[in-house]
Length: 593
Image (cartoon, rainbow, N blue to C red):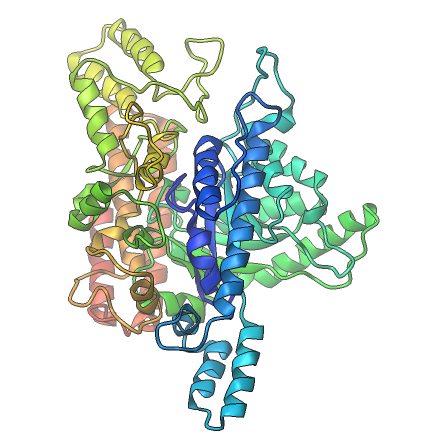
């Protein structure tokens, strides 16, 4: 990577074409390949915009989901390659995108240093040679893709007959990527899916070629060392190498959130730092044995990168993570929602994000997956959900069905955010003879579920004018709580300059360190869980919460020792950090007692 940051996946649609916008500038990004309906519409848009002929892939055609994804990824690859070649041919003038490419690079980059030397070169002949060398050394940013492993519905054909496992949603998406022309990575998130992991063995691009290179790589998005190691070993035994662990904060992130039993990001990164070499050696042994069994020879260990994302907000935090924990790069997601030239956010939602306060961002139970979900109170989808409840019509029409999983009332799985499920569940609750308070609490838990299949793609379709008037215009968005500190619309240059410390977009903003922000989120989660357990006590849950609290206290002790190394940020001196940690610790202990 030329840059020391990447742009992670943002919802289903917010970064679906981000690679087209940033890859030719050398910046890597991740597009979701979950929603093939939205992807097909975006393929039509970008095909026509690029002057190519669009041939639709209908949803009644064989293997349409996989073919749509392949066609879209191939299109992105062609567009990025074309844009990159055109950029390289531009002159090194003040206003050219070629100059912009080099200005965006971090100051420590060797390529940036060569560019600066070229600017200072005197003889025209020498300058021209240096310009040629710079163009030759330029690299595109990766066009990576994301699959949520657990979003893996089994499907039927047009006659209602069950299709095989290879036609499940996640497997079809994997096949779509595997058959594409991309030379990039597949980011697998949301936990382990053995069926999907086994299916990786079927595609040669995930194995080393005769030069021991991988055309397609695997990145695992993980939240702790243990689960990362387990998944990597499972894949290594199949001859599939994990090229990167993308560590994400359990709660201080966008999208779905996983509370990691109270393990905080700092201690998690410390464990990766101290155990990486030992892990690498074990993984490589398993990997070599598996490849030998497949008659594939390999002589050297492939690289395994470590990156981190979730709640990073300043250049000091970015650089500290790289310098202290030796991570290869950081991920900056939610702040790029405020960069219209990079992501797809409709005008109304963009306005709401710039005006939002910290209370507008919250961890919810809105996801039909039954996993915590970072929600935005001011989203039009959240407003629509409340309006439907007020009208006595809770739930959403279920059209795309990516998240159907519940068979409590029906033979075929349905979604817990659907109108069908919520009506059936509310009737059941009302028949139980509960007190009004108990009934209200349980009904609220049911109606909190939100349709994400449509809502997380809607903003993209609105922005590109691909949504028909009779379609639902309500937008769901899932930014991380870190976005509360950013309050303007920014350009790509401004955001990249902020990441690298060339400007400070948060100047004058009183923002705690990212580790303190995450710790506060965990304490809030713990308090809420304790309150809920007091209402409906479970001995198992009580033991879990004791362990959760102990991990938080261990994390606080770790941060107290780390505090001297975190000095340097404005408003986050060692003394201030220690005071904040002491205050949080005292509050946690007194609440638990």
